[in-house]
Amino acid sequence: MTNWIDIGALEDIPQRGARVVKTARGCVAVFRTGEDEVHALDDRCPHKGGPLSEGIVHGGSVTCPLHNWVFDLNSGVAKGADEGQVATYAARVEDGRILLDATDLVARSAA
Image 1 (tube, helix red, strand yellow):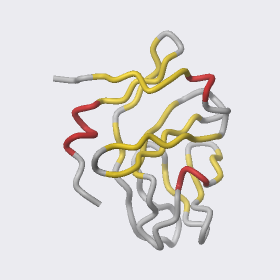
Image 2 (image 1 turned 180 degrees about the horizontal axis):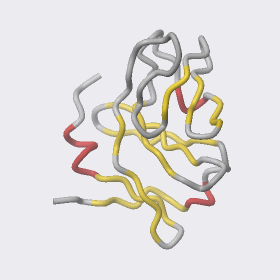
Image 3 (image 1 turned 90 degrees about the vertical axis):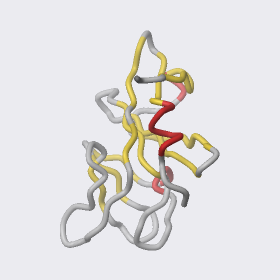
Image 4 (image 1 turned 135 degrees about the horizontal axis):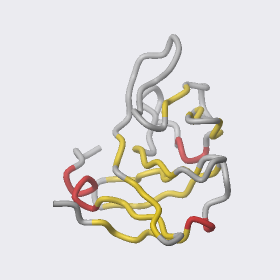
């Protein structure tokens, strides 16, 4: 069963920007693309622990601000020659509000 929680308005995140949601198990980066799609990923790059929420959002990807690793916002998989993956979480927009699946957030592994 899905338990959606409201984390804020879509307009609170600039296009091609991100915000951080702090959970009991660590931080989740919530991204808004230029097309107003919303994605949620772990906020920690597996390479050197860079904050993905401070990265550059381009198309359906985000680039880590530390060493330029590029991650697919849908799958969390690193693109190109880099190997790695970050966890993704169910997110959606309803009536201009961003909703995350709380079940996914509680089930995530400890960092």
